[in-house]
Image 1 (cartoon, rainbow, N blue to C red):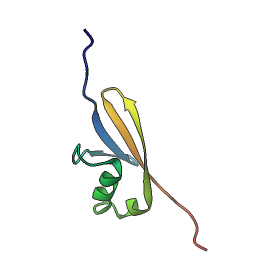
Image 2 (image 1 turned 60 degrees about the vertical axis):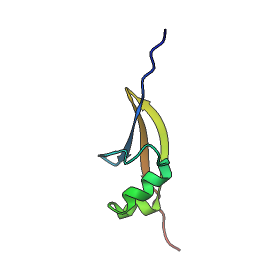
Image 3 (image 1 turned 90 degrees about the horizontal axis):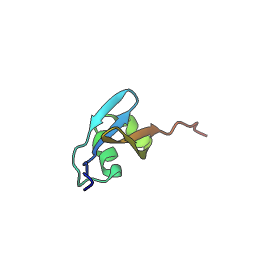
Image 4 (image 1 turned 135 degrees about the horizontal axis):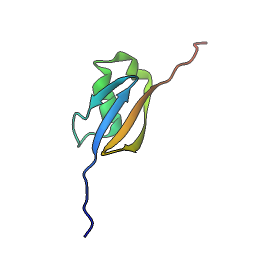
Length: 68
């Protein structure tokens, strides 16, 4: 019989690894949650998940542009 493994969500912001604040939260909710602590995330989006070992990795990417 095959064994199932529960993958833990992990969120990356640059070199910082952020823990999952709650399984019931969508990845967009997590982005909003961490944007209070990291204001640059207000102009970001979430990509992923990518499976890395026993984790689901999501990446916060900042949208950089020019005004005008």
